[in-house]
Image (cartoon, rainbow over all chains, first blue to last red; front, side):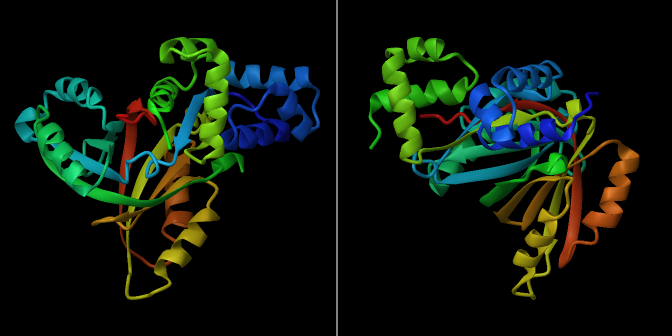
Length: 152
Length: 151
């Protein structure tokens, strides 16, 4: 585990809002030289703390008006087939996130669709036909907000 | 309005957000100058809202990640606002989402270990206002995480 000082935390907060800031710009904001900012980013990247970028879009503007989170429970007889399920679900282009969880469900999926009829199509043709699928619960996303978390 | 080139650029950019500009330009079949110009325009137009760094909480020593699903007491018209305002003050909360469905609000929270999680859950999470029901899903692994869209 890596130890962070206040400057590292400020740097992580800045990058979690604007991940593609140059070392020069980052340094200017935090009162560091460009090489010092670059060294800190390199150290955090090598420690695995910074694990790449996420491009956040206005999905509605791109024609994807609906985001749904699905809780999926595998059927009792399909429980040996976690790998088959994972392989198949990964290949669905509308599925953005697949998480294996412990609790009421086995998997959490984040699914994008153009509208509710399009979501119904994805659900019926792609999700319900996945190997081993049992119970599925859908919740339509209304809003989301990323928080700085424990580096805040 | 987006044209075919914008869509192609977005498809590759969202699919491989960490790829070098030169690689993205080649995949999308445009020059690097065109790529840069189009990316800038997509940002100006608000189609691309932000490019964020993903932070790995595990690497920072937060080994436990939990998805908390809440049903709120909707007899109080201020329930959503007050719950969300209070959730923002919990430093272990890394995301807040609201839903239409059986779940009203979901919080993603991290903790150093199970002992710490128990403390966060009892002292901070269960102290949030207007909770009618709460369920926890413990994250085992993230198998896919992408902002990709079937453009």
